[in-house]
Image (cartoon, rainbow over all chains, first blue to last red; front, top):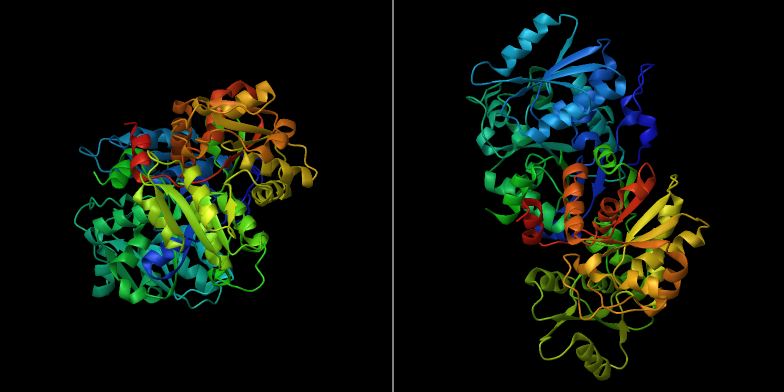
Length: 320
Length: 320
């Protein structure tokens, strides 16, 4: 998982390929956590990826594969940071639209990578409206979706390929689902590697649009942005580019209560020494939700990221 | 860093070698943390080692290299867990003497590996006295020190060898110092690999017996067990077997305030997504203590372990 820092200096020459700059996922095992969950558990953690989440895979692939020199995206979370860093590495410019209410630490993180942060008062104007305005003002720019873009899926497929390349066989791979970019990427990566491992999604029960969509056979949206603690899964609906892949490639979605998400965070903390953000712990929350289904199985839980404010995390740990 | 769980089943045949069962240290890089600290930082984390700390290296090496079938040790912390797990793997029995005031979660962790926990009321009898009693009752048993034993140093040397074998060159390797078992092990491992990298210790200022010993040229003890938050460094003095190695091989010891230890924990949390126990964060605390000394240097910080109660950790994060 080591990457020489010096090799990641910004460059305006031929861009380096994703596989040359990505940090391989971190494989973590914990005998106590396996015992506690009653499964043979392997954790694939993206928490040590560049910018702390799998989103770097998507963002770098996208930014490196398009000719555009300027990229616009709306994101208050991991995709914004990832895109900002990817653009810094690639010598491109980047504007990230963020709600004016975003945590200061997140705004600063995006700025620290040289991106322009465009703050929008979402009580007056939606992020989508502001992006449309910017798109109009900068017609030469590329507007990037955090999950609904073939280049995003392609980037995330690199994780599926890595999991396929380990010397392990899994009965299940469980992947957090928000907009569906990671889960569809993992499915594509596994298929490309001719692996038929069962892939399951893990979604917050209170933001279960993807589960309802699978049941209905068509994309169903949440009414507004659901305020689950798994803030990476506060998407209104899955992406159109992901939908077909999820419908054919996902064996199902486990719907996880807020309490099981938090318990997943606590178990990863207590028994695996892993700091996961709530969205990242969804996959472990899925094991808590359907213990009989997974008992004794070889399960790979993908932990999608680790970026969580210390106030939120401290409160989960202290059960405040 | 992956080890097949199935290969770690208990066995009473020829014991497997440490290098066959140990998990390689986890190399973590963080551009934001490097920037924040003003160094080119590499983190070598033992938090994902078996039982969550480097102590498994020492414990397994010791337990696998002695003929004794029964091992006695006093430890309320990481060594107890590590020894219990090592003995379970090796089919040996093990008694861990712990104060009756130990956290229940730690007692249960030791028991979960099949060890006998011998609880001692330390207001009436010291742990050393109780160990002496057990030694008298079980003359065939081996009494293991958590840090003052050549087999402990030998086990910890495996980490020095791993660091020597990376393709990186460091100006400094900084190692937490409690009883001196890890730091002397790292020195031995590097020397054996013909590496001349400068090794520095990081010790709590309020438990600075090793720093004072180096200055005095002889082992100096703390008066009683200092109540630093870095509970792995609450040792009364460095070990006799370590002393000569430290005196000749350690370039110095940085004495870290309690606040810088906590700030190290917070920085690893916030900028590297790494859960470290306070003792583990001593090495980052050292960078905060002497920033000018390390500015622009290639520094490897060893994070010795990650086992910290969620109450303690939550309070550090929330700055309570």
